[in-house]
Picture 1 (tube, rainbow, N blue to C red):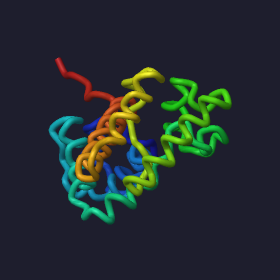
Picture 2 (picture 1 turned 180 degrees about the horizontal axis):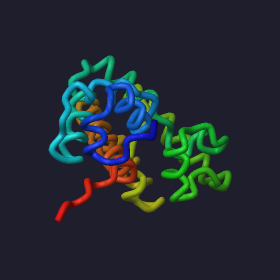
Picture 3 (picture 1 turned 135 degrees about the vertical axis):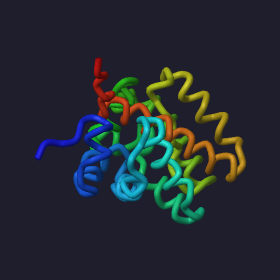
Length: 177
């Protein structure tokens, strides 16, 4: 069987095929697609994405923090080793975060340690919407936030990341004339 590629195919395929087609949209969390499958059919890709975001938002705080913890640190050791999902490698690669010089790597590592110590999960940012400099500014600014603000900010950033991933994965339905 081919992987569903359009919203129409996703709306009508088996739950297993739906989940398999979208499992890696969410970092190490295929359960998000599994939960969304039960809410089909979706009128459009935005509705599909909203259902998936709502599945994560419905988690209690400890479960959400555990989910966030599955995300890689920006410019962290996993990035430098290439030990991330293909999507994360491509996203962080857009700013060459895996090839920082020693001083830059130390700066990012210090920010990652400070953020994780303060909030208990890695700093999450939709890197495709940033330059390296704006990402560093966002990192430093968000370190000043309280926990509730960061819990919400992390979900917002994950929603932005996954929306871009979903747009790359799911083709718009063909128009019929």
